[in-house]
Length: 102
Image (cartoon, rainbow, N blue to C red):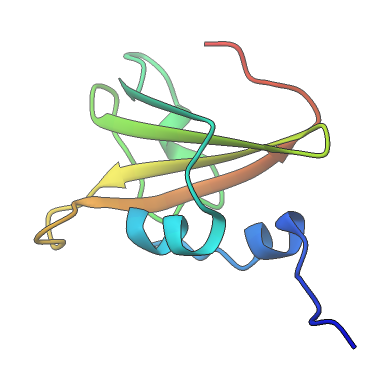
């Protein structure tokens, strides 16, 4: 009998807000794309329901994108002050049927 290998989708669903980038790398491996940007000025993006850390316009945000079986998996990280060595922590995850264009 072979070992059951959890699907990417199942692994992705285990991610919790507040996880570090290294926890994500351990679970999912390296992202296909990494983008550092800022929460858009005049935007309410940083106040979405389900966000672990509310973010203000102009604050840094890191986006990781993974692709699996034609689905796109996004993880957004907020920079938090309590984390010493790696300040990036998961604030939001989303599975999409198509790619988000910047």
